Image 1 (cartoon, rainbow, N blue to C red):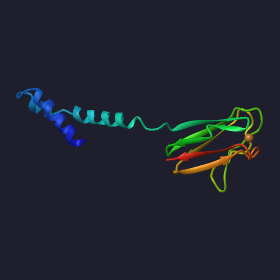
Image 2: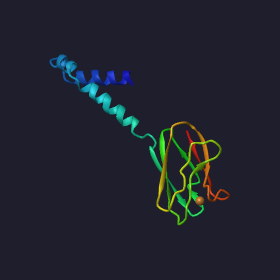
Image 3: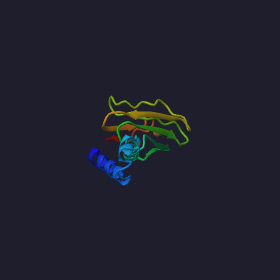
Image 4: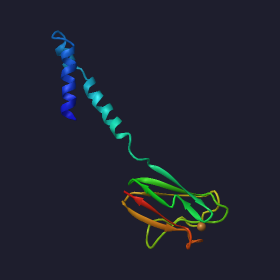
Length: 131
Ligand SMILES: [Cu+2]
């Protein structure tokens, strides 16, 4: 990338002709252009916040794949109490969520995070896959 940027700068300088070549070489804009292009290339990163719905007796989606660093928010869209609880010693532990309540967790480490609803553990099973 640095080589391509330098090439573009010398072409720009040549375009101004021999009289102004020295002045063009002293200008700062090539550096600013490099910064802009860096930001542009980094923009398409994965979203940093994702929603999971809790309906009566299911998580939606039941399997969610996100990038490391994503915050996932579960919202109880159902009519009864639900919860978000990791299997084993996993980090998810919402406590009881009344209808309309939410719980958020930021996934900083890659892995598969299986979880369930404490109140309906036989049917409400889901997982988040963090890459
Ligand atoms: Cu439930």
